[in-house]
Image (spheres, rainbow, N blue to C red):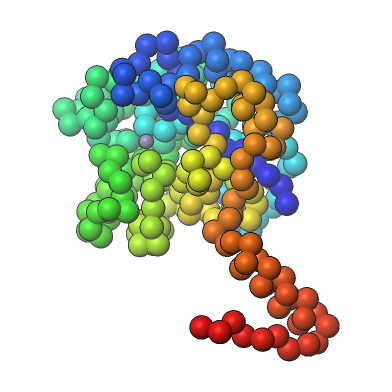
Amino acid sequence: MSVVPVFLYHTVSDDSPPWLAQFTVSPGTFVEHLDMIADSGLRVIPLRRLVAALLGGPSVPARSAVLTFDDGYADFASTVAPLLAARGLPSTLYVTTGALRPSDTTPFPSAATLTWAQVRELDTAGVEIGGHTETHPQLDTLPRTWVRDEVAGCKRRIEDELGHPVGSFAYPHGYSSRTVRALVREAGWTSAAAIRAASAFSSERDDPLRFARLMVRADTGRDRFALWTSGAGAPVAPFAEGPRTRGWRAYRRARAAVGLPYRAIPA
Ligand SMILES: [Zn+2]
């Protein structure tokens, strides 16, 4: 099974507000990360290729990686996009529509966010623009109608601005539930990025509606990042099943393979 690191960044800056500091990496560190990715032999692929594989399409090449950025901070246009373009690297930017300027209801106080004009330019330049709700709530705590408004409203707004359909969604804080995932699918999103167990590798068996990512934070050290680029240092999704469940299935499969009956688990 191919292990796929899907890196998640928030802001790449030397100067971010205190509440955002733990989710910030400096431009110097970010360049170091891009160099480590290249030096480790990882090849950055567009998210859509991983999603195609998760939906049963062609496998992704061995040693693939994906770059994603959440929220829509201004430094994506000023700092990140030029660095990625210089290296020819694809990326996905998940924007919180209510935070993009002009806006007077931003959920990210004192943080510089992108303008819609910049988002349109990034889209034209080949950055995949995805959705991250309108107001960045914890979706799994909201009533259904509110969730529906957030996931469908954000999609409509982005499509109105860009003039074409978008399919990639990311849960704020990584939080979802069975109901939230059903509503995301119902709204027409084809994939949704989560955060599993704080940080985990995705894989070709991962769930397209909650694929795992590796969250890069201010305190993600060089050694940790190097470990991630080698395909180690974090669990691999899917891992909803415990060892007991996996063991039980292996037992049933083994018995079925040789034509022996298996005992049902007592309820
Ligand atoms: Zn976010």
